[in-house]
Length: 373
Picture 1 (tube, rainbow, N blue to C red):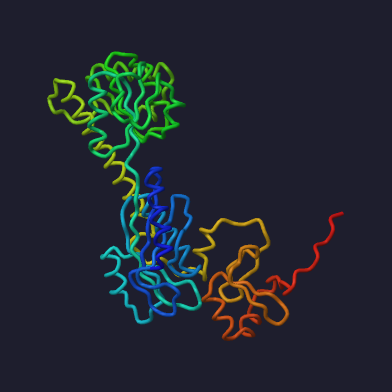
Picture 2: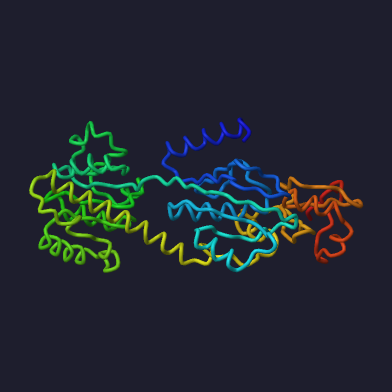
């Protein structure tokens, strides 16, 4: 791999890690000609679906971005094969599926084959601990120790000094909570503004709220939340008591059980997300043949500038940003990838004759724009 590209990707990877942003790294582990990729070529796909680096032409790019985004959502690595290899039997396809290889047809006319390994890096969930009780303080320390990203909120913030938390907020405000985007909230106020803290937690966007309380107290607080207008659907996100019963007595033991509850709920949410992804047609199955380059068109953002229909594969190409362009017969022809350009050059008359009637003919030299009236 080119050293400059490798250094750039490593710097980007470190920056995303520092910012706690998700990303995935796609590495080419097999490349069959004709293809512009090579074994060991890498690209980084960030959480917004932007690809940095090089793993082949435009036709495979869209498939890789989609697969990487799926890997980021589930947090699980995957192998992806893009190929139109002849002679592949149903038994081969079934074996690939059982081996966990996601198979796609190569949408580009130049064919070729690629196999990639996609490794996601997903930040640990953001956890918010409410309260400054001894249990809350111990829970903050334990949650950090198991790799969670921890913030806190309480009526007083001084007790959190020295815990190296990401954020410490004073008071219980659901809007402020959402600014740190907690996936889970642990309410460990234990008698200090329980109602206000729990209401703010339930009005936030956290996927789960764990409450340190006895069952009797938790039931009373549920009734209070209903009286304050918290709906049944949101109350379903409340888990109380927090964590499994470990017959805890001391603040340290109670915190241990609560953090165990955080870990358990985190993994349950991850498993549910992975199960939802695995039930989709794109995972573990052969994806039906797509019209050429359709996968790329579905991922790339649509530009507002003029478009040109690639005569080889039929994909709409953004004229302003097209990188594969040739002049032929007095007009400019645009392609989505180098493979389509090479294929066109082999038999231009064939593709121009078969092009749709509404394919715009771009002149080789730009003409003056019409004046607006």
